Image (cartoon, rainbow, N blue to C red; front, top):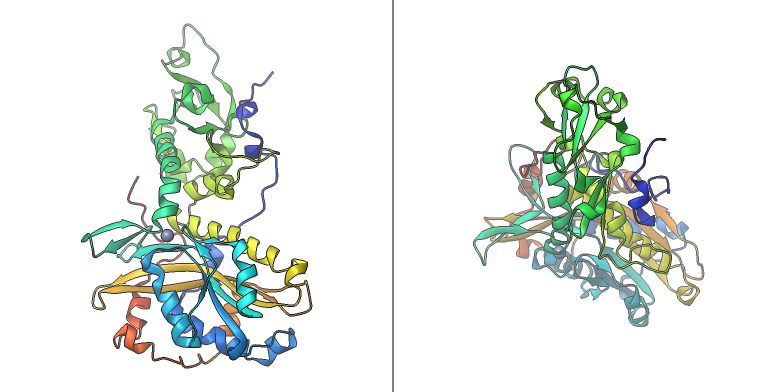
Amino acid sequence: MKMTNRNWLPAYCNPTAYLPKIQETRSQFSKPPYLFSDFMGRALRFLRSDEVKKMGFIYDPKHTLPCKWKCADESVFGIDLAIAAFTGHYPFDKGQIGGVFNQHSIGAAVHHGKVNMDFGGSHVGYVPNEFGGEFGKIWRPQYGEYSTDCGHIMKRIAPFKEVYDDACKSIMAFNPGSGKVILSIPNEFIQPNWSSNNIKLLIDTDRLTISDVPYKQDLKYTHTPIGRSLFYLKPEFLENLELEVAKSFQNSTPTPIGKTLTHRYFNIFDTDADVDDVGLPHDKLNLYMKYILSAHNSPHALKAAIIKTNLEYNKISDSVRLPEYKQNSFASFAGVIIDMYDEALGNYINLYQPLGLCIKPPNSTNVIELSPEEIHYTFDNLTPVSPVYPFELILQGNDGKKILDNFTFKPGYFKTLEL
Ligand SMILES: [Zn+2]
């Protein structure tokens, strides 16, 4: 009988349970992001269009309450400035630290304006370099050094990343010359009790291995090393790798499996995570942690921002359809806010990659949703409206084009420096 280690997993990590999909970095960043202020100008032009009127949404600037939902970090203050400059109104805050959308704020917001126009999303720092740039950190002038951005999300991911990186380094593959590649796995990645860390990473032995390696006195490579278990690796795993990488595992010297440890082959969970009555974690980011850690087309900080924005957007499209808001109308933009520090300006500039738009007309509980492709396609052909207050004053004559040119990230084109 083939053994499984899946029974050690909490219910929410069950590999056969379907998890809602999240937008892929590759498609979301097939087009470069906008400068947020430019996006804002186009968004306002779009909301005035006949296309939007036909959806039943009437944009009347006088009666529309602009709202923001984003992290408290000062690096995203450009969003507030742009909203104030383009609408002439100060934004209502529907956000919380970490880029959380505060559902409880909607009641007060609709009390201030029947029509709500929301801009928000998760944010991530970007430092340009010749390798496509680095995500997850930014220059902090007060300290004169780089620090994490979004600090809240990076701190949340850090303990998981530490365990994942350790697994990538310490799980070894080798071929002793027997024809079959063997995986040597520290026992803490097989059964949770072998690790004292509250973050547990378990290799999915069902997916990655054929069986454990039976002990044979005359075959030295079958002898169990201390603290480790040996398994025969499934040939399909090697077949899906780049030739050079697959070859490195055919060597008799054990080689770390590194980033070939993709989300299919492991699960990761926090034994201290708060779960609800049916065993689902309150923080949905837990469900997607393995995708964040092992993403190949995306640095983990960017992947986290995309996933977090998806999770929070779901709250918006869900809440605006509640019967209590039937009379109200909403135009809610969700996207990833990319923070860059502009040395010449001595301040932060925000880019915006739209991930979705949800429009709810009045007297309805239905929403109309636009995909990122539709937003880019429509917005690229629109002339941005002019701001009510001159935004150029804030940018000190810098039109932001230069900073856009410095954003060189393309899916798969980046260097992960940590590992
Ligand atoms: Zn933040």
